[in-house]
Length: 266
Image (tube, rainbow, N blue to C red; front, side, top):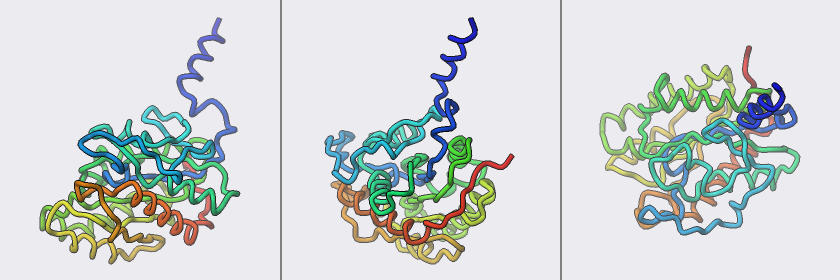
């Protein structure tokens, strides 16, 4: 009589069902709305257009809010994590498809969406809700020995509003990167950050200078400056998100192909 009950438990928790799905390359997606994606969203309505570079692929999975794996599809990569707003096209599917195209032997890609719109760097400090959520989701993604490949980070627009926040941004960002590596027991984790393209306040250049001035080992910066935005002049357009995803993929393929496997420590 226990067998049907056990079967229902396994169905409810597919992350534990089989070791056959453990050979995934894990990428953490964190930051704010230009990472989760607002491409094609106008007045809280998504236009329904999925660029060719962002089409779904059975070798690209995403970790849901319920910690189960499913095939990744736009525009729902972040929708159950960044549920405060309507999500559109982001950089992650373009990134993953570009990695697979250029390195078809890499295998299955597991995206771990964690980005939340309108968050500032202080809301990602060690011990905060969003920080802990990111750690918990990453640890769940690594349950059976997957390879942690990189953290993709795009954040900073919210910190352009306040001079004190802008001036403290570099030290806070460096501490965030260091804390993430320490808490994941991954001292050499590749981090690919995006330097701002847009701003919400007058201190964009201070934030950009901080981002471009980060001097930590194995932290690479992709500069989004010049990418076109949608009509709100803050969020990247769908074509720009596609281009950004390809830029992130190029950075990973250049610097991250020899990343050593990182899994949970007992």
